[in-house]
Image (cartoon, rainbow, N blue to C red; front, top):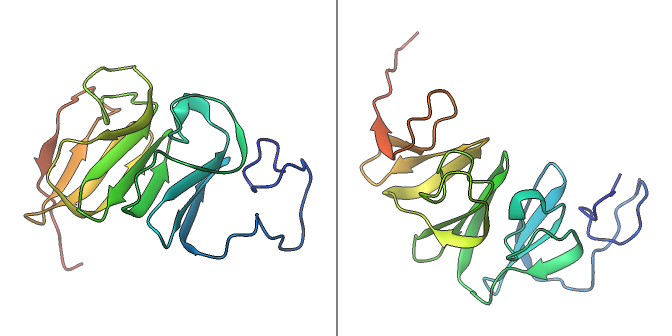
Length: 168
């Protein structure tokens, strides 16, 4: 447990009781995926720590981080979503920023190029996205589902999906 610092403390051991991470008391949102953790403070700054494979922590490198470290100097982050080997941050202006493995061009047009720091995403997302292993799916401003990346058939462009629903 805590082998890469994902708990925000430098000790590499099981922590069966809650332990305070640092002395800050102004956290607004927190999320974790696999061995990486992320938090947004009330001042709008975004922080991450833990395993940094594929640059998923967003610090511009692939070094493991054992305590919260701020991502860029931007201070208008609103949400953070993590999945697979990528992360997406949403700022208060509604812009979507991605970083991580970029396996199927879900973040950048350069397939296979790891994106180690937040890069503005093209797309027409509203305010909700989910991140999977090699893809991002979100609700568009027109309320359609939209995705980028496609691990199934390498159809790597952003497009809308018509969703069939039934009353069953």
